[in-house]
Length: 219
Ligand SMILES: N[C@@H](CCC(=O)N[C@@H](CS)C(=O)NCC(=O)O)C(=O)O
Image (cartoon, rainbow, N blue to C red; front, side):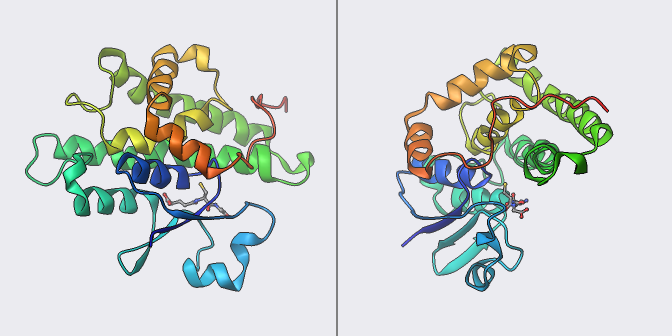
């Protein structure tokens, strides 16, 4: 049994999609940010930090999307989605795997300000402006990389593309996709993959974003 604790549209999509690329279908337990479901005693037995993803697999409960992705690549190496020690692309693989969190942190800060604060008066236009610029800057290395090649690694599609699959779509709620044409094309390539579509349909409707684009408020 593989059970994924998830919030549709969040980092848990990385794990869901990677499992789908491996032909694995998890049982999915969905939660929602802000309704208290991540704060229950039951969920804290799964992850005391009250965050997703958490993956029950191989008799363990794993947290941290990047660690889960690495674990799956190592223990299911026959799918060729990781770059294991000794591989010429190992260092680059690790860089992109972890860089996905640099981008995700900017998005998470913007989600908090723009989506989750219950009262718009609590928002800081200064912080939103700053974090939006930081997000745009953080996306630049990815945009440059996929200008000349289809995927982040020269050898082709891998789990590091899965790490960015959720981030780019979410980023386009805060930065205009037209300003990042190579990223928008990359996102389309990722979304065209059958496993992406399988996981996307299975995760359920996005419960995070209420509008397509969030402008920086005038402060
Ligand atoms: N670095 C962690 C971050 C986990 C995380 O913050 N997940 C978010 C969803 S993308 C969450 O559960 N947020 C709930 C909260 O902050 O209350 C990972 O990659 O798994």
